[in-house]
Image 1: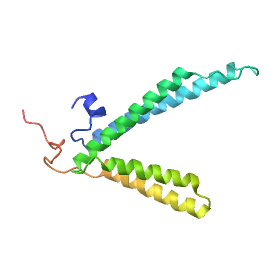
Image 2: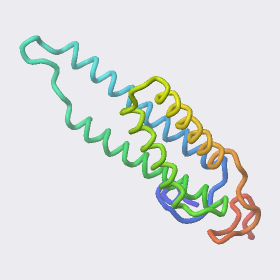
Image 3: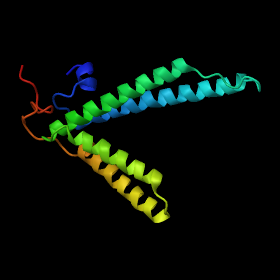
Image 4: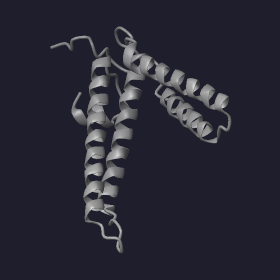
Amino acid sequence: MNLTTLLFSFQGRINRARYWWVALINLAILTACLVFALALIGLEISNATPSTGAPVNYLFMAIFVVVGLLVIWSSTATGIKRLHDRDQSGWWMLVFWGVSAIVGLLQETATTPSSKFILDVGNFAVTVWIIIELGCLRGTQGPNRFGADPLEASPQ
């Protein structure tokens, strides 16, 4: 499997090791963007004058949005391939993203400490479920409906 297929295709299967490598690469890319953004903000603040304020770097914001979208796409594609390795539909990624988003929105509107706590516990449980499902459980042994076992040696 080439790098483009690994990162951006929704077809096929990948094992846990490849999933974690892509997760680490995505984390490194996002960390580098964050460090660059913080350095840029610090530079702009130090060069700002009281009358003009800090200039906004729209080019960097556009690059950050594009990189963010690529990382989201890559994370989704590798998650779907992990689900395929577990012989599950890739549509479960929609459930993972959707439940996380809904719980996040509910956390924003929660008014009492107990409701916020309950939502925090729910969000933690969903996160643990996702990590276990995608990153810890072994895939189906042998071929399944999504392709050959990525751990089996390919015939020469």
